[in-house]
Amino acid sequence: MAERRTEILVIGGGPAGLAAAEAASSHGKRVTVIDENPQFGGQIWRAEKQKLSGKAKELVDALEKNDVELIPSCTCVASLPEKRILALSQGRTFPIAYDKVIIATGARERFIPFPGWTLPGVFGAGGLQALVKGGYDISGKRIVVAGTGPLLLAVAAYLKKKGGNVLMIAEQASAKNLFKLGLATLKVQGKFLEAVRLRFATLGIKYSTGSSVTSARGKDALEEITVEGNGKSSTIECDLLATGYHLTGNTEVAELLDVFALEGMVIAYDGQKAATAEDFLYEHEDIFCAGELAGIGGVEKALLEGRRAGLAAAGVEGDTQEVAAEEERLGRFASAMNRTFELDRDTLLEIMTDDTIVCRCEDVQFGKIKDCDNFIEAKLQTRIGMGSCQGRVCGSACEALFGWGTNSIRPPIIPLRVSELANFTTEKD
Amino acid sequence: MPDSLKFKIDGVEHATSPGTTVASALLNAGVTAFRTSVTGEPRAPLCGMGSCFECRVTIDGVANVRSCLEMVREGMEIETGG
Ligand SMILES: Cc1cc2nc3c(=O)[nH]c(=O)nc-3n(C[C@H](O)[C@H](O)[C@H](O)COP(=O)(O)OP(=O)(O)OC[C@H]3O[C@@H](n4cnc5c(N)ncnc54)[C@H](O)[C@@H]3O)c2cc1C
Ligand code: FES
Image (cartoon, rainbow over all chains, first blue to last red; front, side, top):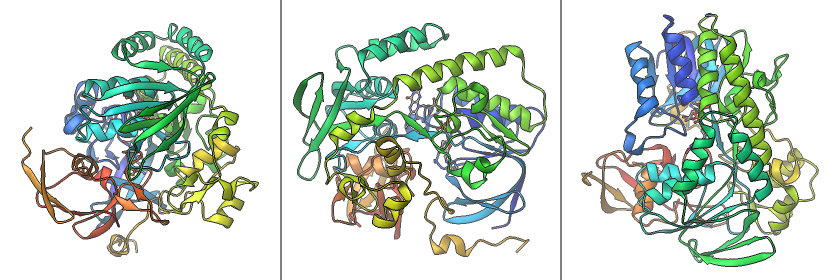
């Protein structure tokens, strides 16, 4: 396929990417947005049966009006010389050349292993929500939502609305920390009301703080789980377990483009170490980052950063004091939130058994890596992180369990087939 | 929405409505083992968004496709358990 060329390339069409594209295209720039998913909208606006609504629809409509090129089901898999990326779409790879690139690849859920978590029926929390939005019918299913993070309440409310029989929410964070976060929501417009709304939407569902799922059991699929916390242990029969441990940034594309190596770079590998508002938005000549990949902070922050990155890439002065102040408020809230849902390593390690699988691609067990000093050593000994997911799941788990810095990402960042590379030609080659 | 799309799972005819992902359609059909792990365990979707690679199946002869990122199409043939 011939090389494509654009002025501003936006990688990721969630709130941040769409806001960036809208801002840049409104100032006359030729913009292309690609997204790995078959539809735009990112995680929060993932539409049911592909029907976008509200702000998401508004932005996509604006982009269509501004003649922005939108390419769904298109993944950035590698970086090429001369300001180009290699994109994969519909079984074909092709280069896209750009003047400026905005990386808005968002976040994924962080998963923490526990005995039995590989059983079919154990899903991520956001993962199950996404599958239901994709048409999975959960009516009447007995569901437990567990792990940590603000997503748990949102997911429980959603699953309940979709007819799921949500038995319980088990939140690992302590009641004390959650209360502190409750106070912090009062300072940010909208957050408090959202928290109240979610609490109402989940009324009737048992909410246990300081509690964790310590094992999941079943023959071919999930049948029951054990939940422990506050000195108590209980066995719960359920069909589905939705479990996630807050979020972690999708930093692969940024790494491909060597954003980390640039001077003054402040994004830490796990994103969440970026502590201040300025850290969340990185600008360096031609490369901009916006949204959750650089720090978990919710949709308002993603929109604001996206807009700022879009204006900056278009060369427009857009930063008013108001925006900066709002960004700081949201940044502070994000820090408070991330502190509340920080994982307690001792609790996590207590749950692990030697035969608990940590790397699901290579089936590497906890006992095989627990005495290693770092991720590289574990990798050389066991192949952990060397499977298809390139450590997207086990890497952040090892960070949480052992404090290891991990970097298994290698181009292409998803496995490619020979047939997909075969057609990779450019006029330049 | 009516179940207007016909597709096959391991040779057996099924139907679903437009806009359904392959992963969701397989779950609706009661499939538990989407793929078999290197040590022989059955595996099913975890992340629902393309990052865990646990939902891989064969679609129309192409192996290792992440089913959570694909929409069901009329006449699609899906093979599981690989
Ligand atoms: C699973 C999940 C569920 C969530 N659910 C909620 C919720 O219910 N409510 C809520 O308030 N917040 C939710 N969040 C938080 C939410 O992510 C943010 O509020 C907001 O969506 C962040 O916007 P973003 O644009 O930064 O990233 P995202 O919305 O994550 O968008 C990033 C986009 O980049 C794409 N992408 C990633 N890598 C590539 C690549 N290599 N090539 C091409 N495209 C790529 C992805 O497909 C995605 O569409 C959820 C997060 C996750 C991970
Ligand atoms: S469910 Fe994780 S990649 Fe599809």
